[in-house]
Length: 474
Image 1: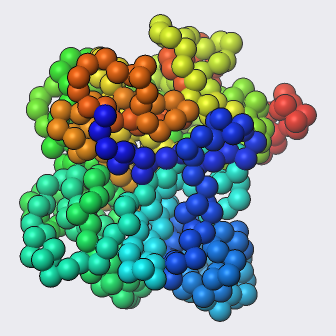
Image 2 (image 1 turned 180 degrees about the vertical axis):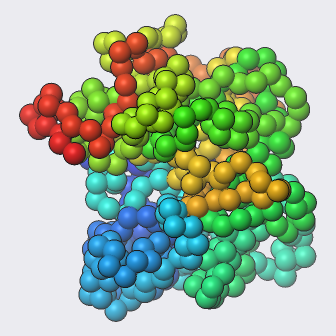
Image 3 (image 1 turned 180 degrees about the horizontal axis):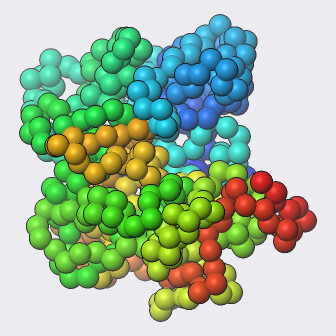
């Protein structure tokens, strides 16, 4: 069995689920409760400062230097005003407004960078906003780097391995991402300079991120980083995949308005996700998104749906639903109308915890995993970027995620989906190859939408009560 590096990718705890379902899951206090944390940089979309501060160690929370990076640049933005009001209560909290060059973009990344008194640093990339709702009964995921020691002189001279998926390449891409915040003013320059002094050699994973603006996609300079769909395409072009049929399951919490035709979805996003080190057959795509019935039966009922978005009201949105419908699959996999695929039923333990997590996973015909990505990026042109125009990609939002594959952890390794646990067990052993477990939040086999089923739409009204006898009105 391969070494447990993938335990760094974990699900978050769910308040109203059993202890068994929360086996090996991680809480926000697990991430922030260490009294040795000296400084915390938080890059997130939605913030509750009081909630954030409550998860630091109670004896040291007033001493931690907390930096909050947000994207609310309009003076009268309610989110900005609340942030300013809350943070004013804490002398150790500093707010920073991210550079937002695109009007319709958001600061959607979700990342923590921690510096500790023991001279270690850590990067945590996750999918939850810094609000109570996301850390209680919504399914989310976390990727943690190892504790990063400070560089020694011998390490500095050996930082030459620039292969995608390994520590030095990850470091270069992360620092390039962070430097993009300094485009107009030195928002986090001092932090970047400090993080540069740490050793990333133990990191296994490729950074896949989006930075707003226009970017060249044909620049082969190894010191540069590609963003959005161009970044994931470049990373996947180095990843080996098994021959034969495969499918990519795109499990997200939001689907933006993409257009009346499938041009962008298929020829920009899906083509990028289909990249591989060697030529292979085109994968089939499945998109996992909850229906109104699944939201009604979730732990928080209709309230969960406020965080899950797709629109089907306009003519263009109706056409979009038509071309996406054949690809739509359930989250909970237990709806009466859905079409269940063949296979042994295996439960992921999160079907009643509505999804805020975003995962992109390529499964091969042997049911093992070629690669997996945890990210803040949903299906949207703002997140992944428009199609290339004159060799440039245009991106509206900040996003960040991590891509992993079995060969990063051990030569010849096989990655398998594990359910309700992080590590593979005896039941997963088939051959002699080392195994890498990747915990998946949903259940198998997948369940396709029935003919009359449609996605959840937060801007619609639903008169059928949820399990708490509540109705939903936009």
